[in-house]
Amino acid sequence: MSSSPSLSTRSSRLALLVVGLCWLAVLFDGLDMFIYGSVLPHLLETKTFGITPDKAGDLGSYATFGMLVGALTAGTVADRIGRKQLMIGCVTLFSLASGLCAISGSLAVFGLGRTLAGIGLGGLLPTAISMVSDYARGGRTALTIGLLMTAHHAGGILSAYVAKWLVEPVGWRAAFWVCVVPLLFVPVLLKFLPESLSFLVAKGRTDEARALAGRYDVELPAAAAKKTAADRWDALRALFTGGEWLQTLLYWLASFGGLLLVYGVATWLPTLMRAQGYALTNALTFVVVFNLGGIVGMLVAGRAADTFGAPRISAVWFALTAAGVGLLSVHMATGVTTLVVFLTGVFLNSAQTMIYATVSIRSTPDTRATAVGWTSGIGRFGAVFGPWLGGQLLASDHGDWGFTAFALAGVSSMIFIGIAALRTPKRPVAAPADQALVTSH
Image (cartoon, rainbow, N blue to C red; front, side, top):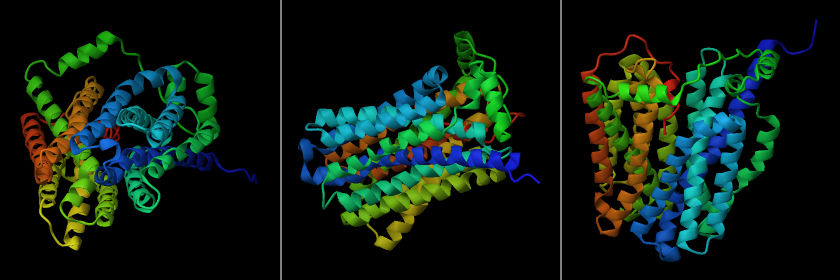
C-alpha cells in the first residue's frame, strides 16, 4: 500500500494552505485599517502635528478614499499581473505606507501614508477572496469566504491591543512600526502561495493550471467569456431601464449609508467613547469587543439570511444596529455598554453584507456582477464621508451627536433596503452564496 497521501488529502492541504495564507494577509489588512482609530484618542490628546478633530476626520477619509481607488482598480491590475502578485504588492504597499506614517514629521506626510495604505488595503480583500474561492473545497465556498472575513475583525482586535500595549509606554509611532511587520510575510507568500487557477485559465496558461489542479485534485475553473467595454456598459444601462432605476438608486443609497456607518464607527468608536467619559483603556477594550461581535455576526448572518431571506435580515440588522449605536450616545455602566458594543458589532458588520446578498439574489445573471460591483462602489463614497462627518461633529463641539448621526445612517439604510426589496420580486435564479461576500467591505 502506498504511503503517499490521497488526492483528497492533498486537495484539503492545498485549500488549507491558501486559506491560511490569505487569512493572515487579511489579518494584517485589518490591523492596518483599524490602527488609526485605535491610536486616534492619543493623537488628539497630545495634539500630535497640531491635529484637531476635523483634521483627524480628514485623515480617516484619506484611507477610505485610498481603499476606494484600490478596490476599483484591483480587478484590472489582477487581470494583468495575476492575483498572487497583486496580493504581494498590496501587502508590501500598506506595510511600507505604515512605515511612512511611523517616520512622518508632518500631518501632510502622515496623510500621504494613510492614503497609500488605503490603496493597498482596498486592493487586498477582493483579491484574497478570489484566491480562496478558487481553492475552496466543493460546496464550501461561502463558508470559506465567511471564515476569511473573520480575519479582518481579528486584525481590529489586534490593533486595540497594539495600542494598549505600546502607545502609552512607547509612543504612537511604535504602533505603526508594528504594521510594517507584514513585510516579513511577503517572502512566505512568494514561496508558498500558488497563483489563482482562474487567472491561469484566463491567460491561456491551461497546461500550468491543469497540472496544478491535477496535482492537488482541485476542480479546474471553466474559461469565462471575456466581456468587452460595450458589454459592461450594457449591463450598467440595464440597471436603469424600465422600473429598475428606482430599485438601483435605493440599493446605492442603502449601501452609502451602510458603509458610512461601518467606517464612521470603526474610525471614531474609541474617541467617541472617550468623549463619553470612559477611560482610554475601556475605550480600546470596546474596540476588541466590537470586532468580536463582527466575527460572530459574519458567521451568523449568512445562516439567518438563508432562513429568513437576505432583504429582511438586512433591514432588521440595520434597525438593530441603529438602536445599538444610538444607545452608545448615553453613558451607561461599563458592563452594559460592553454588551451593547458587542451586539452592535454583531449586527453592524454583517448588515452591509446583506445588502450585497439582496442585490445579488435579485439581479439577473447577466447583470449580477455589475449590480453588486456598483452597489459596493457607490457605498465606498459613504466610507469616505463617515470618518469626515465624525471629525466635523467633534470639531464643532457636537461630538455627542456623533453616535446619533451614525444611528440615523443605519435607519436610512434600513428604509432604503426595505423599500427596494418590497418593490421587486425575487429572481427565479439565485446567486451563488459566495457572490454576496466578495465586496462585503
